[in-house]
Image (cartoon, rainbow, N blue to C red; front, side, top):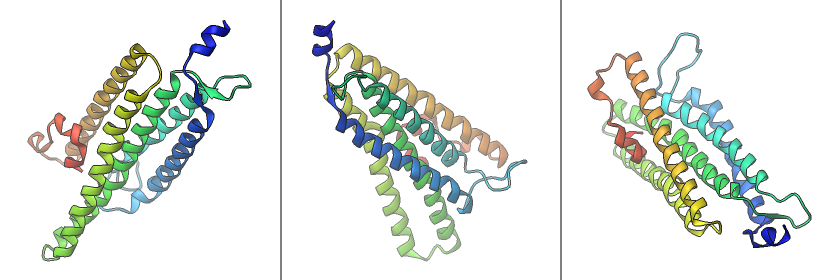
Length: 217
């Protein structure tokens, strides 16, 4: 029993604590953004809601909150229940992936409505060139952060994971499947939004655009 325990990968508890700080910070940002989203331009009005619904942003923020909560559970579950103060379970890597997913969704929930607000202002005053440049710059920054959090970060985590290749492959497949389902969820939300706005189905961006989501913000 002791030999099996000592041969398992051991990650310092401080590494996990630093991630808990990131997750907690992300939850705070999500909570703030949800409360301020109602004051931003765009969205659609639905019966039963007192404010406009930003389908993509609202869903992104809710997924970010759920992913962050699951990441907390995964990180805590990875901690050994003894006096060694190490993380020795593969759920640590799962928590890392959930943390990055939560961060990516927060980026979408923040930059997507912000981009809508800029587009609305540009539509009102197309001659305001500095505002157009500022909108492109903000969207570009958001795109870089989104790619880093949803693709690059998880790839580095899986590449550097101290756990077995089989475990890492399973986690990688699970993460990819989660992205496919999440992007499909986003697509269905956009279809619903277009139905409410009486737009033609041809105006909906193709599903594969979700893999570079910043293109449809």
